[in-house]
Image: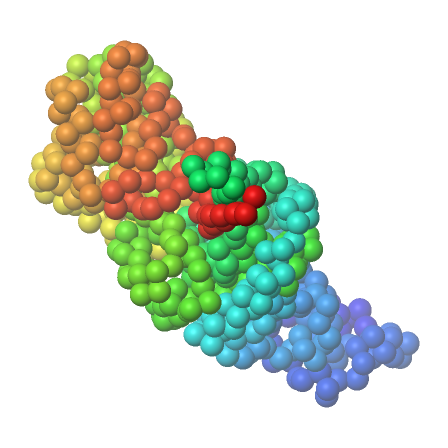
Length: 593
């Protein structure tokens, strides 16, 4: 038996190639169907007693059974508990084991939790497959992380119906109970924060420390809205007419469709869903096709927390089906609310869908954040804030600085210190590697956009201070780039880059800086550095944005309202104002008194 086992082990080692710490590409041999095998443990015991080599088929099956406790792939979320016959039969839409490469995160720095790595849709409290699946890729290596249910219009409508049925009972659940359930969900997120962070890094590429920070930020929205659920107050109004009292009630809207982006695959969900559930609404979440695992992991934890079936539903889908699924969700007459975070162009399409049935909407759309440094600023503080604002998640955030406006008197000093700080503090690499601060961009299209902005600026006279090209680490990596001599006619000055590019524009007066900053159709966030109190008040009030950072590069907080003006969106998320987006105000006139 020993020689047979050793031979089998050698055979499997020859079929495995390393992808770095904790990662294997497995090339499994053909394994016969389970029904053709004798019961595995009995076969192994018989071979041991008879001192016979383990048959190759049994060795392969034994290896597969052992691997099932560590490997999550297109075979599904319950792989560790699946019977052998189910283990050896891939789901519809997944390739057979054969020579296919399956990504394993069993142990090591990139170890992913098998319990949280779900691959099916979550509707009505059940995990449901779809007729097809789509691949989710690791943006750092391009390897396939897994195959996820590719939901279509029927699945989307089923999710809405499940949410609508659940709303009938959820809306009358006491605020104390809703608060308690949200708190349990928060507690489970905190207990699983390490595994949730690894999921985020695996599917989005962001450095693990940033992913850990996102999990905390994400969980805090559940904690915040668990408390806000008990603070939904109405009013009593004394009207002019005698014998009457006027009551103002706040009631949940109904089913909310939540469509989220890939750059914050966990926090963008809880910021919306926490408020919706606290208000008494139910939700259908359509996560970004690049990062569905975080949404599905949240579903698993919501289920464990006791959130009733149908209250939180997730319908992942591929890019090719996103348009039709989005339309089906947003035009369904049972849906009362749409909450979307993403591009302004997509937001406008969803607004058209909402207009047909006059649905309530919340939109957090694109930005073009100015970062202004006045002569009175503390340059060292400004550089520190610029690093934090620009290069978080490799520049892939909606509130990151897109244009740096620096006053002539300190321009050269700022550019020099900014470049030095970038060299010292920024390290490009895989998000799981210790010390990495800059992971990959989400896909090659994102890299091409950064390249386009850099080449356009150079062709129009910009100077590359550092960076300026793809990084040798991989096709989705781009060097942190600093440009000077940038002018307003360059693409990077009036288009959102969404990448690690910092273009610096020189200006002379406060009025000029404000004019440049406001010369855009969007207005999400803006930043400026100054030590002049009067100037601080003037500029903060004149910037046409929804959020302003004064001598601060990071402004997001669960306690504060998040949102923009102009074409950067409608409504506010987080804070005490966030729950109002999911409540209807009802006036009751009580007469005959």
